[in-house]
Length: 227
Length: 390
Image (cartoon, rainbow over all chains, first blue to last red; front, side, top):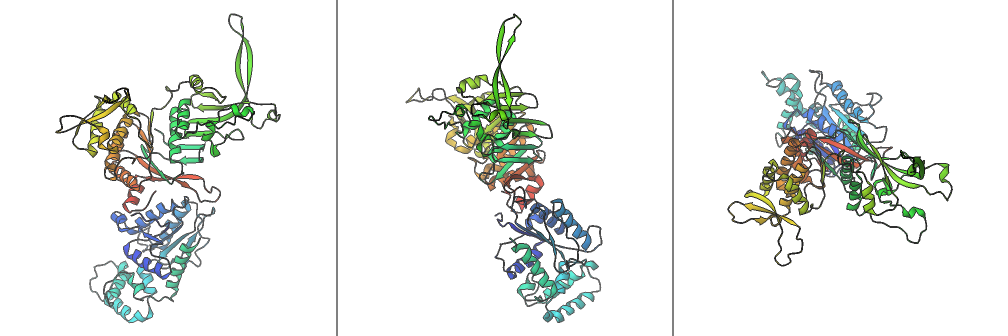
């Protein structure tokens, strides 16, 4: 069934979508009040980030008609191993999309760290929210954010996971995926092993008082609650 | 083929810009968003302002009804103001310059309708035999002219129609419809071939007339192919004169469509097979009648179960390209949108576009009707992901 919600949050894949579904609940949004996508069926071609950008651009097209009233995007900065990746390239990509629709870029990056970005429209179209993982400043992935915001009670198991990953003699994953491997290992050793990123919230594995978590929650609330 | 469409000051539209059109175009939008008005605008454009087309559009909404006040002595009451329904707010504009414009900016092709005031003056001239004759001449007057300030001045009213090729006046002075039609200049030679298929079914006699031009041509094969979408056993189609046994004189001029089914010795009436068969017949006959021009379809899905809509679209996309027909259809149905999307993704050789009409929320243009475009790629990806485009 086509989703009727005109509040749309674009993310890179199903793992991220599950995390944000849980975060929306924490922020007090009703189930499905915010459409979090694109869905799996959208990912039959292209990479997650590219799909998120495309779905974001399509949603931008619906702002003028009011079909979309609230819009946000969360993507990984990735690492600057190619010209299209890294924090700055990722931010520029988002900025390029929104300015094409007449939006204004923020005056400076100051304060974006753990606050996210907001793009305003001079003719009062809805303000757009963007968050570049992990912290709107550094290169990296969603998993960096998760580890940065880990509950202190998890420090033992997390450092054990990190050291286990680091002692692998011949890791199959490339070096820039180290944090993804550490997060997966951390989650593999929980009460119910191998759950997704959404379990970070459900199982209280995150420090809800950390600057990272509070910042993301505040960004989500302000992006989707404004009238 | 129309590449872009601009509609100004027509019905609900102040200014609608559609920057890209396809060979096949599906128009969606809420009620009162102007879907049918786009089809009407295209009909007027295709007819190049042919007066009988304008009157037929008004008649289809009963907008040719007269509400004159018989007790009023105002000379204004003698004006047929039906055409005001074409203008925003159903009023002739108070000032000059607010003309209806329907056109393709890229091809610089257009039709413009302007409501004008004029005085009728008579000019004397001498013909070649030396005889003095009088001829009627219109002397246009600006709507804000000081000449109109006096209560005793009652200018005539007319529509001034102009296209890239010609310009002509359509008087609004009260006169019998037959006389007005007689006075209108036939424009068939300049018009683009077009067929408008309304929400309800067109009459069997109209279908029969189209059939007479299609029988024993390639069209007949496509007709059978279309009918087999619903009934695979169809092997033949014909139109025959209706013979009522009880009341032979009633509908004596009407014809009826009959079909032959494999394995059955005698034909059966097409109408007995349900609305879907008639709709498919109507679609294909209309496509052939619109060859080289425009086909305008109101509510594509009418009579068609969702399970056959994709095959119907497949056929329309194929024939549109084959016959060089530009198709514009409207729908409210998400099944119809999905079927259209699947067909357009499957048939990349026919350029298909969906546009949604809606009202702007942007400051400075609040409530203005705007079009949001969905090309094949965008439409395919969004419908695949179950994202609503209606």
